[in-house]
Amino acid sequence: MNLIVDALAFVFDTALDVAPIVFFLFVFQLFVMRERIRNVQQVLVGFVFVTVGLGLFLVGLEESLFPLGRLMAQQLTNPEFLYEVSGHIADTLVWQDFYWVYLFAAAIGFSTTLAEPALMAVSIKANEVSGGAIGISGLRVAVALGVGFGVALGCFRIITGLPLQYFIAAGYLVVIVQTTMAPKMIVPLAYDSGGVTTSTVTVPLITALGLGLAEAVPGRSPLLDGFGLVAFASLFPIISVLAYGQIAVLRGKK
Amino acid sequence: MKDSLVALSKDALSSLRDLAPIVLVIAVFQVFVIQQPVSGLLAILFGGLLVVAGLTCFIFGLRIALFPIGEDLAHSLARKGSAFWLFTFAFVLGFGTTIAEPALLAVAEEAAEVAVGAGAIADSEEAVSNYAVGLRLVVALSVGVALLLGVLRIVKNWSLPLMIIGGYILVVIVTTMAPPEIVGIAYDSGGVTTSTVTVPLVTALGVGLASSLKGRNPMTDGFGLIAFASLTPILFVLVYGIVMQ
Image (cartoon, rainbow over all chains, first blue to last red):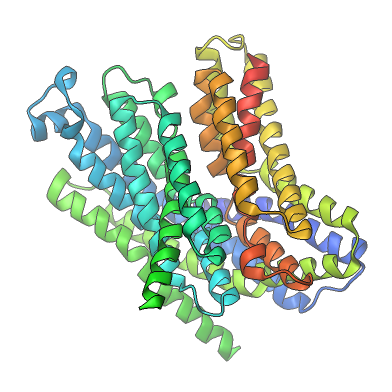
């Protein structure tokens, strides 16, 4: 019963977010462009689907994945658990003791990215525009690999306390080198994929992981060191998608 | 009607396939690593069902509404040929969809707390709320500017790699001047701005625009708008941190 009320509340909230956008689009097309909207009924039905779908999606995440994921992030960074797997107490922990955290970070980053609706949207479009040359699944797996690696590396950074900007600057250096070598058609898509990965599903979970880690590691402050994982998750997909383009070209040559 | 049902059930199947890896990861970690009982399994299963249903509806609606209207608008903007309305549309779309973004609200509040902790602003309710509101405005403004720049790039045929890489070099330079406590938040804010509803619209806008302008290729020129929307918030928030210092 509660869940139904929750679901309705989420759908209502989503409607409040979506309604101004729809209103703006319609007003612009009708009054500024002075053109009619094609298939207006279909578009309206579509927006209802978008709103209800997003609302249900969010309430479902809130009921299942988010509490579970947050709990697991806490459990994996819990000092007792870390002592059990490494035999080290808090002050003597070294970065290798957190291997379960790296594995979990990579696995959860990878799998939540595959379920990211915004990424699906971009992949569908890229597939359509490239005339099938870019596969919907291929692109998504490439992005997800990048996010998984990025989040794991971001955890390593929080644990070791190394400055965020070194990693980011080094990452962009790699991006620059790759850009000069990768096929031209993949570059804009690769740059975009950094931004689309980090929205609905991935961000809340990796933020919880970052904050949990910053609390568990002595000498880290959740306020200063807990942030930055999203930045890793946005940077590494650019690298992996550029690599995906390079590999596709290499395979094409054979 | 029948076609729609077929499309919907296809979407439902692919949603199931898309969510399976998450279930697998969680199950493996629960069973082999954490080894503690999970409470409320039934609620979790039901939540999972809602996720599948929601994702299915969203993707379906995306194909029949978000993509077509985004492209139609891009085509009419290109047909009309008014630079003023094109840029106004791009800016308002970016600003308007970001200012109300729930993820941004959360980040702005956290950022204000960090600023209090670092002694950058006074620990009063008014100062905190001013800081948070200011940050939201700055990020929304930055996304508006991003889409404007991105559309300008498509029209003028400027090089995307040069602009984006130049932008990130600027980010690195500004980072060295910004107060350390804002850096993590600034870098993260680039990721939170592009929401699930905005991304398809913006993508359709870019691709639609590139395909209706002569001499542009939708693949090499249509994408890239989101890249701008992930870059400018970092820069703007860093500058906001410097100014508010």
